[in-house]
Amino acid sequence: MPPPHVAVIGAGAFGGWTALHLLRRGARVTLLDAWGAGHSRASSGGETRIIRGAYGADRVYVEWVARSFELWREAESRWRCRLYHPTGMLWMCGEDDGYVRDSLPCLADAGLSAAEISVREAEERFPQIGFAGVRTVFVEKEAGYLLARRACQAVAAAVEAEGGEVRLAAVAPGTLQDGRMDGLELADGSVVRADLYVFACGPWLGSLFPEMIGERFLRVSRQEVFYFATPPGDPRFDEGQCPTWVDLDERIFYGIPGNEGRGFKLADDTRGAPFDPTAGERILTPALLEAAREVLARRFPALAGSPLVESRVCQYENSPDGHILFDRHPHAGNVWLLGGGSGHGFKLSPALGEYAAQILLEDGTPNSLFSLDRPGHGEATRTQFER
Image (cartoon, rainbow, N blue to C red):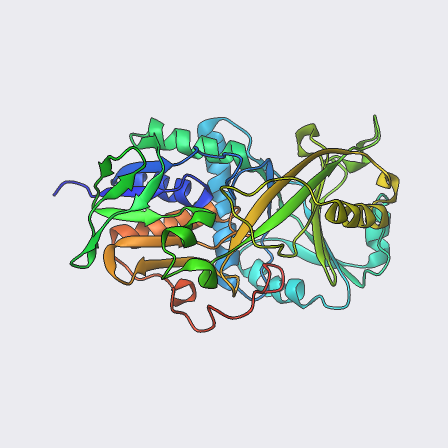
């Protein structure tokens, strides 16, 4: 029999890696995206994303991160481009360190290194960081950051180079008939027909399937990211001397050093206001910038008052319980839904794509943790770090 034709809608981290793994397993693949891989509206766009293995007691994600480390390194070697920067990860915990502490057995089983160090040792190792209010500190050795936009573009280029079709096209679901979808409707009036359809279109997934997913099962929130200047000729805030970090307190802030000279990245992980990824204006909120400056001054005193050199307004899209959505459409057996990974899914997307491709081509059943009708799916949001 001829190989199945799979149309993947969305060339972000989930869609791109799924398309690439489908192709490598013998499928015919068409990858479609309205603006192209790594575009400015995408949840997978922007310059950088953290890669780390700590996931509380969620062992499946730890295992996927461990596998993804292998796949990121393999991709760098194959494509001859650098995507992964191993800076190490500094976890600074306030009153509650359960999220990281619960991760330690899972990390050890997955072959990833993480260890608790004293606050005093942390102060000696990282004198440029202020540890006021920090109760416990953990260091995750293999963690670091990934070049996000560049990686999405590299994956899409690999899909095309290895025989897949990559198309710039706005897509709408086609008619559902007799338990199947009969093609994709493109904005130019044409139709794309395939054997299987994978909708991995990030913050647009809910609007494409409003009755089944909508805002109840996939919430899109506005998120702001800031890049601050570092002192001229001062290497203390570059990746050679400063780790990627997370400040786990009442609000969760995180940051990435260096960023290939773009500035010292700092962002609030707290879910923001509802956001329209297509029409939303991406203008900074002064109050959020001021809050970021306060964290910068407290944790990195030498950067207090540093000018803002770059910024981004992006979005998260998450299921309410924080887990990924990967399930078959309940009314169309040839349609699959993949999303809800913002804030934590980018790093593990190579392994998730590998897993999704296997499920799709073997007509398998995904882990019930990712199902559309899982218990508690519509309950109050928990962040990636609180799970």
